[in-house]
Length: 317
Image 1: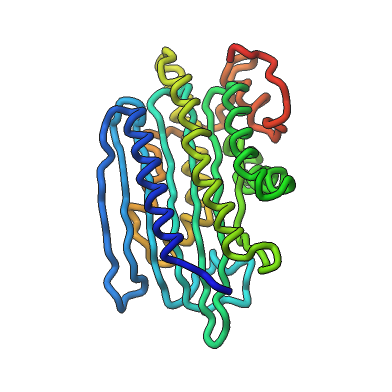
Image 2 (image 1 turned 180 degrees about the vertical axis):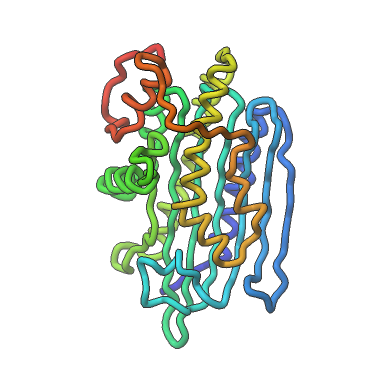
């Protein structure tokens, strides 16, 4: 297989720059830049650039990170679906972001696009792509959920009609808190271990799909931010936001493959855990009062729905 890691790296750095520019414009404040390098000879070598905002006018905390690392042995989280690659050296690069807004009516969002290359001795490199994006609202708006999913569907459509329903279902199943028996949010798309045979376009076709997913993030999320950031809220909504953020923390620390890969491979802890929200609450056996907007999040939104194709029942939302 012919791969061009330099081309992937250049795209990912450009994507990070474009996303940060769009988020800065929405917030009105600059993201911090924190570049880092791992010296050769250690457990990991490579470099990265973390871009972070804390205490912005719109975003309470958010990070858009680029990393490009090489390691001597693939960690277990990267080989659970490819056990034949256990023990192989690897190269990995990607852009990963999580945005936690101040306003409880603006949803938290996650996006990641990445490339892995396992380099088994005496054999051709084994390359695959992964990523996706998903939305985690605290208060549900049908218009927002439909918009987010329709942008995801449009991004994938040039690469095959079957991809969106497949990746949408994968997202619903992946971002699910098994110990709570509930989804983390309203989903989006998720894919991993994605590659194509040479007769279907090989590396170039798979990389083109990844680019379309990455490029779809800003048009999927920023219109929602613009619609919701001016809505008035009270301490009640902030309190519920902090409670629901606890589910986000639980998922990232217990189930998320990207977090596990970073920690197992000896990655940079500050960059890995930038996904954690700044203010979180837990309560013992709490349930929302029936008929409230908080209860409707559970009954109407935290369940799989065909958001891209169903009509809105409340168009003004």
